[in-house]
Image (cartoon, rainbow, N blue to C red; front, side, top):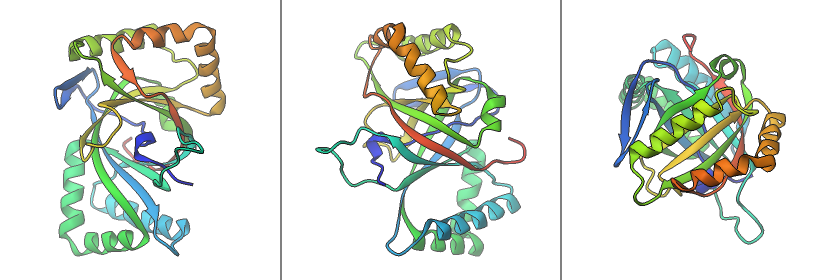
Length: 261
């Protein structure tokens, strides 16, 4: 099973206060502070197994807890992609999202690269898989956080978009807020986030991605039914603000949550 960057990078998870952050000339405002998301696009090395990789994960989770740098750790594998018989380039076996506040991420990386224990774990990790690492910011537009926290296995769709020429960041943010207000209970989904690549994201297929989280495939199909019965009109209106690639879907497994999450 392979996963290409252009259909990649999924997410969920949040907490915290209020602020905004910029990605290039983009700004997305929110009543909840953005999260830092470390993205790991990975393929197992020849002869290595997922069981070995998972054991390394468990060592990392224990190390992170001991050093007070725990993150919410999510692994995603492809479910419904844009690949087809004429377009199926080599990609990744899976990808992982490590969500935290920015301070925790900075502290964790300093410990990871400068301490003997961190260096040892890193060497073992690199002996098991080839992972390309990126950084991004994640903004919550709407979420049922009780449902998000209770669900360790879910479906997430990704839709990469680029703001249309002449549309300001403020106009785009206002549009996102109006959609969130209109569908404040969701439509089969338990969360909607926007994802902005920051470091290492030059080859992403858009300036940002809509990330919609569903508890299961039944929830995803509820949303598809709504879309087919007139919801497409709202999607068509949104395309006055941004051009989008179209949705792909992944299976998400939450492998670690901080106790405070």
